[in-house]
Image (cartoon, rainbow, N blue to C red; front, side):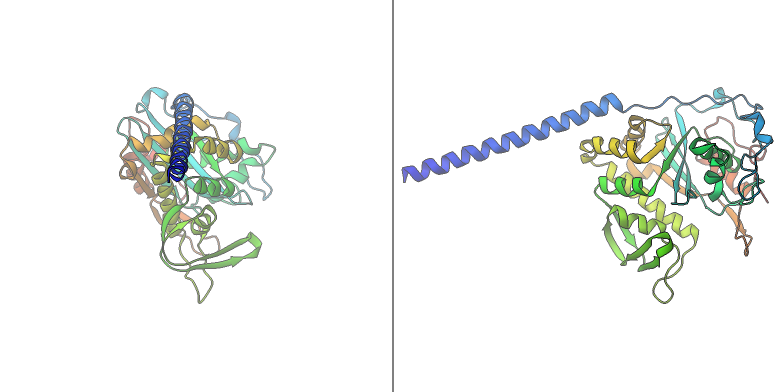
Length: 357
């Protein structure tokens, strides 16, 4: 009996020791994550903007022909506002996601007001007509058009910024380019996202290597399935419905909101090294990994998703076949932009826009 007691007591001491070691290891990891967070995670400096009336690139008026015979480097936009005219601690971004063919299928303009602790995301439909001289006049073609003539990635980013400014009236401070791989890795890094799939989404397109088969209902989607949910638009006849680009934008915004919700959990601190790895490998931006994490962490201080509002720029309708251009609504845009993402102390006016009609 005494020997059995000694064995049980020894086993208990070993168990307690193991638990203590595990707790200590977790504490060290958490402390390391917190220290890394405090050192690396910080707000960026807001870049100064050229004086109002100046030209961003005087040679841009000349342009250069793209592969379709259009002008890839577009006209100079209306002048930029001075730095002094900005709201304090107000940051703006253009976020765009690329397909394999480098088309910017997803374009969003985001803003974070650190004073009011509010965040805004405004989506721009991919088929929006923009006032440019190139052959493809949809905003989806901005990035590949800007890359032509040896301008590469930087030229693509600048063209996106230029075309976005023509629609919203100001040049976004920062850019974030997200590829499919980055999207998948980020969703997986936060443990997946809980999404309500409204109907069966079934579609196969071997040319795009796109294979979608999602069942309806509330479910936890992996990164791959969240990407399929976000990309779905055309359904297989007799099985799944086809949706509009506006409905697809809503789905993309749902996934983005779900990712932010996951970032609100304490466990996200422990994933900082993985987030940094994803940023360094897959995401192109003029923000550092620490600056991006600072913005992600701000959702804790702005009341979570209650202070993160999503919108789509107002549209007037479509041109129909054969081009299917979507026409932006200038008056509706002014009302939305001035209420949400405008970084200036004055209102954006119609003179700041350059919208094709």
